[in-house]
Every structure is written in structure tokens, then in C-alpha cells.
Image (cartoon, rainbow, N blue to C red; front, side, top):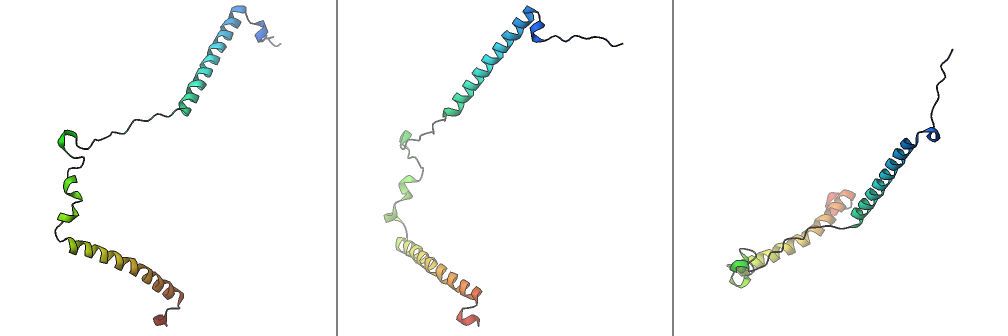
Length: 116
């Protein structure tokens, strides 16, 4: 015949085994609670390092090495020619882009006068 095997349930365990299991369950529960608490605190907090602040004039030097000459437009060589050329190029580019866009659209649509 067959061998009769008995299975122990939690009610039939020895008392010291039950105490060990319940204490380890308690320790695991405390660990879980602490882990949840620390992870929740970490997600709610905001940590950042402060950016470095460079102060102008430290050691008698400006914050940028070319700062004294940088915006001295009055002392610029060929000032009228340079500024005039810059303004003229801005106006020409700003005016030619819309003209080219209209020409391109009308050519694609076949409605431009010279495309027929």
C-alpha cells in the first residue's frame, strides 16, 4: 500500500517556530513600512545644487574678458558702414522672403503669370 504522510498546518507548528515566524513577519513589515516612508519622502522632496555665481569685478577683472570693449559702439571703426550694411541686409532679407514665398506658391499652383 500507500504511505500515509501527514502535513502540518500553521496550527500544528511548535510554539517556538510560530514565534520565530511571527517575529520575522513583524521585522519584514517594519522594513516595508520604512522603505515606503523613505521612498515617499524622496519623491516629494526637491534637491538641487545651487548654480555657481560669478561676481563681476572679482580680483579687479570684469566677468567677461572683453567686456570693456564689447559694447563701445561710439569707438567702433567704420561704424556708419557697418551699421548701414547690417540694416540694409536685414531689410532686403525681410522683404525678399515673402516675395519669394508668393512666387513659389503661385508657380506650384500654376497661377503665376510667367509660368504659362
